[in-house]
Length: 450
Image (cartoon, rainbow, N blue to C red; front, side, top):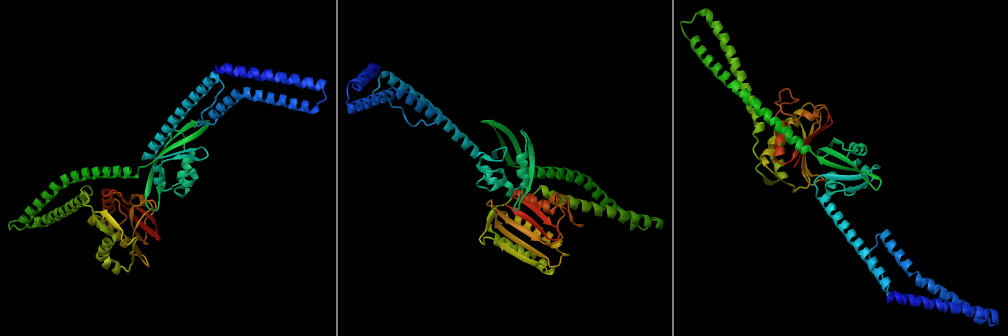
């Protein structure tokens, strides 16, 4: 009935337009009523415009529908009231299609926000960028790793590491690589993996970045501990009987030397043998002490954690080493920022670590004019407590700096190579780290990061 109404309305408009045209022609040809002719002509034009507008509704509706799809605007329903049932069906179909598009769009948005939440909760840093370095996506782990809130372009990371920027801009598809970064507060070993994606005819590089410094150090320490455990076990098994036998034979010889019936010509030989046995015994005792010392690397106790003020720790250390500092004419400075800074750790073990670092610093500045040693505590930009021990002594050469924490390695002629290794293991037990940097004869700095 609606479609029929539309057809009747359209026929009526056409008949009325036809009559208007005949009237216009009649007046134009048979009368001199100019005003009537003009009015009739305007009436014809208005009726033609009305019919065009009336019949063009479907085209306008269809155009609006397609424009909504083109610009993904599905917020407005389509209204075609009073045009008949066929137009009601058209309106219903249009609105059903729009509803489907709305559902698909809502589902895509839900999936997008779901994936965004997953990406933001991943603990590994993720960066997606195009071939020009323009960043498309970063997650919270990336911002935390690089301590940057806004990363719009890969070049933004130049302040963190130019080498890292160069690697990210040149990395290839499915490439794994390592980048070592030595910062002011800590050293990072970044494991980087890249993959390329094609999105809308654009190449996107998706890179995952993970700091594996802690894992590497843990594995390294475990390897050293296993090696030391095996070596010390085998050495002790060999040394113990040698020491026991040499002491036994030395005792027997002492008894023979004191015997009255010993031949005079054998006394000198007995003395030589006794001296050799004494040397063997002394060396075995030295080796046993060496083994016992290195066994301590595998027997570090778990920290007895407590919360204490760093100022108290520094005061105790200053009291213990004040004589050494004064006797070596060392300019000594202490700085704590803020003054109320507290630390959760095993105070006894951390005190042992710092004293070892300070004794090394005193030794390093023994030949330095105007020797200076400083001890500083602060909170770094990652919110972690850092203690620095700095001196202006002879320093550590670049080809040696990476080896100073290796067991058995030492730059001292009388060193055992255990102090810094022990210090590193103590820091690892605390979930922290110790790093070193040095410019020979200018500044050497050891940093404890908790």
